[in-house]
Amino acid sequence: MTEIKVPIIGYMNSPYLEKFGIPRQPNLVQVESYIEMLEPYNDLLAFEGINEFSHLWLIWQFHDNKNQQAKEKFRPQVRPPRLGGNKKIGVFSTRSMYRPAPMGLSVVQLKEVKKVGRSVRVYVTGSDLLNGTPIIDIKPYIQYSDAVLDAESGYAQDQPERMAVIWTENAEQQKQNLIKCQNLDSRIMNELEQVLALDPRPAYQDDAERIYKMNFAHFDVSFRVGVACITVTEIIQLSA
Image (cartoon, rainbow, N blue to C red; front, side, top):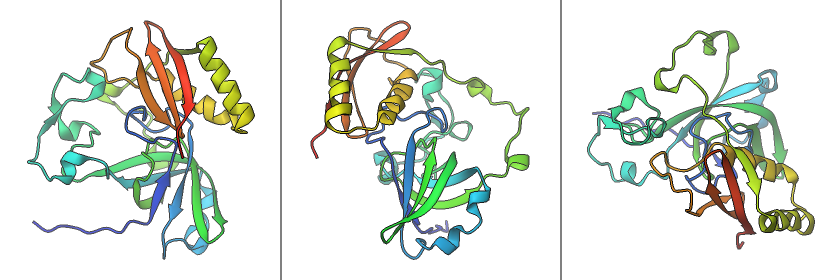
């Protein structure tokens, strides 16, 4: 079997510091992130005309997939989180990371491409990529051909429901202190609430008393999940 080698053109810089909490599809959360382009792809000439497109396709690599890296035997079926994590379905009927080629595909909204020092950065919103994800290619999204309005999406036809997010008095005080003392952009907290509202827990976990922890944008966030709401109990800044 012939293997195809592809270049890495850049790396994603995003607030998703771990797999836990990453939305299961792009554009569910309008998180801002950027791609740091590598040489020789960090040439603004390569992006001439890209501002005429509102959205982009990102082709990327599942780089933190330990089972994939170990080159385990091909598994024809997986357990999608959308089906509760218990029901098996064919791998080619899912977007699971456990697949023959560790490649992902995401649509994101383009904000801007700009030079920062010697670097060229592609700023986007709506990404579902882990911080440090290798980017393989960038392509423009074509509305008339890429958007299929009457498409059927099987078990994932409907968007996931969003839960209310509330803060305990202690967590709210911690949040306000971070915003004031660390000169923190309140946008980060808005993005955090969008992530939490999607209930980041594995589908098979349902313990109302359990305290979950998640690293997001260099913060350690603790929360509980109730019947209809997420309660943030603590937020602290991670050590540099």
